View (cartoon, rainbow, N blue to C red):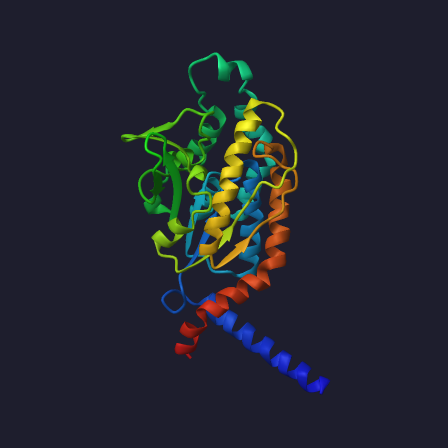
Length: 301
């Protein structure tokens, strides 16, 4: 009977909406603690901003945030309490911040002749201005970010101390920028060992983790030594992502087309791609979290 089926489906929808309202308005331990893990991806990683906007619009709970590389930059701003509208402004102002100049200033001769790596002046200046006064302890949302010890290959997960230097280390491309010296370590981009920091979110206390993963989908061939090196790092990150995704409760993967990690003049485009994909996948993400949370929600009825 078609009429009966429609009524039953409507009842199911009402029940699902009621359960989601209960879940979204609850705090742990009434519901599972939710983590958000933001991958690396360079300029493409600005797609995380669109994901954050979609999550906020849907009322999706986020108790912990972790990030690597660009995911660490976006995640740290979000965890500090910066409105998503302000993070969007970062993308619009990318040219003014001259972040891409740190890449464009790297010439073939400087890589081959000079026996030193460069310091990312503009990136460092932006991070110090935005995060310099903050520590992990005074963030509004608990946050972690990953880097790699260049001498040992260890994954280093930052959860305490000054925020700016941790984020700078997490986004510090190896082989191009000089390692960040912190205490007794020499640190570079965490994407080499922890492209999607799901474990870091769980280390903070997350039981269920939504991962925003930005992979290399460009078919453009590298045009120079620098872009070849960046693509090798990118491919390594994509391989790590496929393994890490199995540990996530749900994965959102924005499609950013032919963007490269250095296309900082296209950050807004990446953000829009994140917003579109996260909006498209939001019902499925809520369903996955509801299924995971159902036993705990039923206990509270």
